[in-house]
Image 1 (spheres, rainbow, N blue to C red):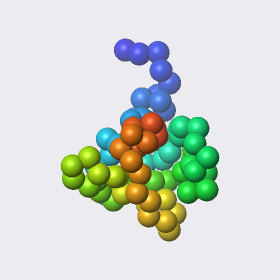
Image 2 (cartoon, rainbow, N blue to C red):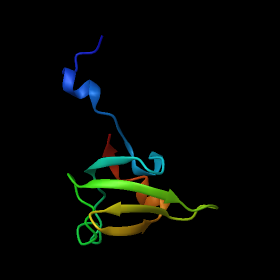
Image 3 (cartoon, rainbow, N blue to C red):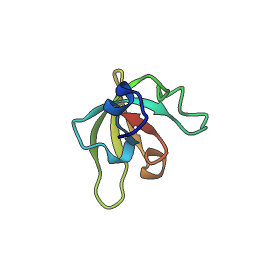
Length: 82
């Protein structure tokens, strides 16, 4: 048994790149990048994975009413909770 509070056991965090299409999460952490906040990518925002392009292409996500294509490298650095 772990020493974590019960609420923490229910919350799973993972890199955005690991979300399957159609799954929604809440952004917990974003890398320091001047484009994150203007795009709406900030902690507390809901994010929906729309899909991932083949052959190393970008990840398509939806935040608010905006669809955004993110590089896989950047998507690996954004942490979300389910």
